[in-house]
Image (tube, rainbow, N blue to C red; front, top):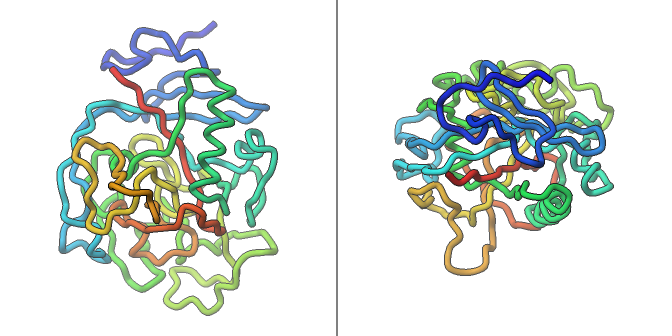
Length: 298
């Protein structure tokens, strides 16, 4: 049996002991990862180390909205495992026994799932793997992982917005309104012929399979674009995320939850690390998905 070579910086695999639920583990140019397999569907999780970052956007960032501030420093004292892609339709079907997605194919992100639906998914999946304990990331965990040590609008650098649906810097890393019709092959795509100022001409668009765009420096794919991703937080209008990286839960039952990352139909200005959206926890539509997190206490 070949044992992966793990670096000496602290992480959960430093002692050579993968979690009981892991079916695979190792290290590559992006860092450390573990995998689990269910019904021949394998999902990789990347190790996100503890650290500190500036959450939100500076006031002069192109495309900025007011609820992305005030920019503030967040310190995450615990590392965590994060899905390297949004949850795929194959994994959702293996856990839930159905596929609610509009744009159906196993390797595309599952969509048309509400925040409440995702809680049911966690209940079923966590029952199958003792100690897996997956949940949704907090907004801070999501943004910290998306930025991967960067402070620019997108993790590959600055974002010049040339038109509502035209920001060429997004093309290598994200499916957004300017390019989501490129090579889109399904017959039920949305009519995009009237969308203005597109980066590429297209008349029909929707989601795309995961991992077709370039990963961020921590090996995470589709953090921007393709599908919105639910966060654990109640939506707070003034970017009031706790400075310890935990989810903002408010004082009453959440009427709306936070979503991050933009989607295939969203304007260029929304596919930025700091952009935030609010959604009813029962909301379902073809641009909403999620990815999972597991916190690893020291």
